[in-house]
Image (cartoon, rainbow, N blue to C red; front, top):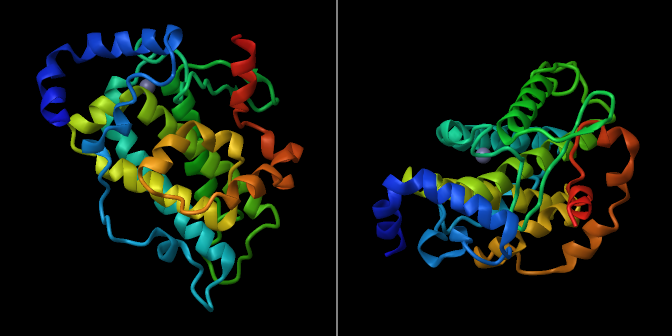
Amino acid sequence: MTLLFLSVNNNINRKARRKEREGIETGTSTDSKLYLEAAVLERKLPDMDMKTLVELPAGLDYNEWLASHTMALFDHVNLVYGTISEFCTNTSCPDMTGPGQRTYLWFDEKGKKTKVAAPQYIDYVMTFIQKTISDENIFPTKYANEFPSSFASIVRKIVRLLFHVIAHLYAAHFREVVLLGLHAHLNLTFAHLMALHHRFSLIDAKETEVLRDLEIALHLSDDSNHESSALNDPTDVDGKDKESESKSHTSDENSK
Ligand SMILES: [Zn+2]
């Protein structure tokens, strides 16, 4: 039913999107969350136990396991964003937004916070990740090479940045995602990221809270203990890890 409604509205998509954006700026955060509607809550491989998928197999190296999941997540996010990227422009998305009026700021190389348009932000994210995972010193592929001691912190940063892209897809482009029939893939990618996070405590709870309602709607978490443990994760406050991340909640505070 919802899907039919979406198709009918395809031709006024641009206008609708503009309205949606105005809604984000002025309205409440509870309206127009298309991604919470029952018809689009499906995901590919619905019977797959995500916990099993991310569980470290006996005999496999922890870093090796994290590396393979990080690269897979990157590929999937890149794929979904690539298909809708023509709709993500400086005009349609002058800010890098997530649900609930969240805005992500980019930290440049000097550690200075800058407001950039979503396509620019996502280009920075994808370029950074591509460069990082191709770096033999960080993501070694040759047998003799070792993972660096900072590997876990680099993975946390990558997963956090990928989460920002996913959050933007849900907040600003879910309509296009559904029209292209990719919502189940996006939901699966989100489920994969969250399962990995729940297993290995990768992102701060302040980051994931913007999609908490979707997490519940997709039945992705059957316990809430991870919330408190993630909050107390001391690894997220080391300076190095913050280099070019967005500490989104700061801009939230500024906008009030
Ligand atoms: Zn966008």
